[in-house]
Image 1 (cartoon, rainbow, N blue to C red):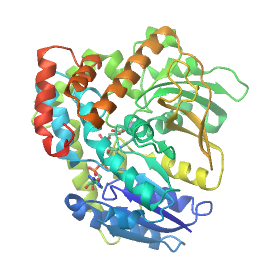
Image 2 (cartoon, rainbow, N blue to C red):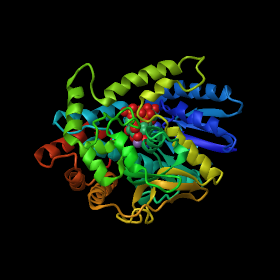
Image 3 (cartoon, rainbow, N blue to C red):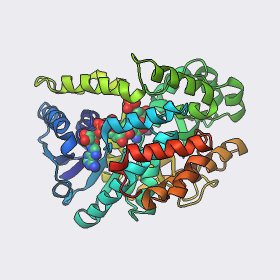
Length: 434
Ligand code: NAD
Ligand code: G6P
Ligand code: MN
C-alpha cells in the first residue's frame, strides 16, 4: 500500500484531497495518510484531520489518517509527499496584501511585492523539507501546491537538487472545466496546450480534428470569464488584444493587462472596513469551513469550499499522483523542468505546461516559441522569479531590490524600497536568511 504525507495538513483544502484519493482508490491503493502541521496549526489539524478520517470511514476503504507535528516521523518511507503549507498563516498573507496597498501598490498573494515575500518565507522551509526527504524517503515524489507554486517548484530543483517534484495549480483545471461549455463542447472533445509559468501562462485549444477553436472561446470569454477562480476580480480583457494574440491568458494576467482597473478594485476593498483584502475575506470563509468540519456528522467535502480560490486542486494533485503510481500517462498541466517545451526560456527553467504524467514523472509537451509580446512578458517574469529565488536562498538585499525593480507590478523608486524594508520587518520572524 501507498504512504501519503501531506505537509500543512491543517489546511481547509485537506477534505478536497481526501475526496480525490477516495475517488481514485482503485488505481492508487493507499494504506496510510500522514497529515503534518506545526504548533500554530494544531487546532486546525485536529479538526480537519478528524473530518478526513470520517471521510475514509464513510468510504469502502480502510485507510488510517495519522495526525502529527513531527514531520520527520511522518516522512519515514513515504511514497508521495504533498505540500500545502502557509508560512505565517493568513496573518502573514494579510501583511503581504496590506503593506503594498498602503503605498498604492498591488497587494496580492502570489503577485507583486506580496508574492515575492511569500516566496521568501516559503523557499527556506521547502528546502528543509527536501533535506529531510533525502534522508527519510529518498524515493518519494514531492507534489507541491504551496505558493508561489512555480517559484517553489523551481527552487526545489535548482537549489534543493531534488528532481522528483511536480508543481500544481488549479487555474488550468478550472479553465479546462469551464471553457468548453462556452462553445457547447465537453472537456474531452477538446485538446488543450498550455505554456508559460505558474499564474502567467497562456493556452490554445483545438478540437479533435485539429482545428483551432481558441478564437471561438475568446469571442465568449471577454464577456464573462467563468473559468476564473473565486479570488480574482473579473475585469474583462481587451477584445482586440485577445484577438491579436489568439491565445487565452490565465486569470492572473489581468493584473498585468488591466493593471489600473485591478489595482483600483483592490484599493477599494482595502479601504472599505466592511470588505478588506482577499486574505481578510478568506479568514471569514475559513472560520465558516472549520465550523462545518467540527460537525461529527459531516463526512464529505462541503460545497462551501468552492468559495476558496483553490477549489478543484485535488483533481490535479490526485490525478498526478495516481498517474505516477500507475504509469497512466494522463495529461495534466504542471510546473516542471522546461526541457525545450518553451524554447523562449532556458531548458532548466521550471515552466507551467501541458505534460504527460507517468512513472518517470512529467514529460512536457512541446509548445514552441511565443510571439514577441508574450515572449517579452514571459522572459521578464521568469527572470524576475530567478532573482526572487536566489534572494530567498542567500538573503541578498540588493538582489531582493533587483527583483522588486524588475517586477512589473512594483513601480521603482524610494517607495518600492520602503515597501521592501517594511515587509522585511513585518515578516522578520520567518526570514532568517535576511
Ligand atoms: P493555511 O493558512 O490553511 O495553511 C495550511 C497549514 O499550513 C496551516 O494549518 C499551517 O499551520 C500550516 N503550516 C504553516 N507553516 C508550516 C510549516 N512550516 N510546516 C508545516 N505546516 C505548516 O493555507 P491554505 O489557504 O490552505 O493554503 C495552503 C497553501 O496552498 C498556501 O501556500 C497557498 O498559497 C497554497 N495554495 C495553492 C494553490 C495553487 O493553485 N497552487 C491554491 C490555493 C492555495
Ligand atoms: C487560486 C490559485 C491559488 C491562489 C488561490 C487563492 O485560484 O490558483 O494559487 O493563491 O486560489 O485563493 P484564496 O481563496 O485563498 O484567495
Ligand atoms: Mn495557483
